[in-house]
Length: 220
Image (tube, rainbow, N blue to C red; front, side, top):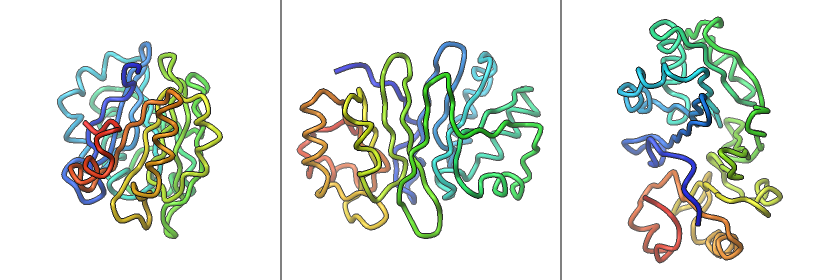
C-alpha cells in the first residue's frame, strides 16, 4: 500500500455539507479536482499558501453545482487578489458558457482538455442525461491514479486500471446516476487484490457503505 496521493476537501454526495473535491501539489504546481459551492470557503484559509505555487490547475469533471458551483469565484479571486492565472482542465461541452455566465474574466484562466505534465487524460463517462461528465487518469508524483468523477458505469475506466496504483471511485447505496456499491464491490476487491489502492468518494452514508464493504476500502 502506497501513500494516498490526493487530499480531500470533502467527500460528501451532492447534498452533503462538504462537496466532493480533492487536491495535490506536484513540484511547484497545485492541482484541484472540482470546485463545488462549499469548496471556496474550504480553500479560503489556504489562499496565501497557494500564492507560493508557480501555477494552479483545476480539473472540472462536470458542471453540477456540487462540482463547479464556486469555480468562477475561485478563479476570479486567484486572479484579482493573488495575481494568479488558473489553468482549467475540462472537456465539458458547456464549460466556456458556464464560465462566461458566471462572470469569470477570460484573462483569468486558460482552458485546456489535457495536461501533458501529468499525462492527464479526461475519460468520458455516463452520469445524467442532463450533462456530459468525465473522470480522468494521470500520473502524479510517480503514482498512476484513476479518478471516476460522478459516474453510473465502471466500464470506461477498466482499460486504465490494469496497472493503476490508486482508484478513486464514486459510490452510492441506491445506484441510479451513481455506481451502486453492492454491484461493484466484487470488482473493487479484485482490483485491490491486484495491488490497486481503492478510495471511495461522493459518500451519501459513510457508515452504511463501511458496513456493506466490511471496511475493506479507504473512506476516511
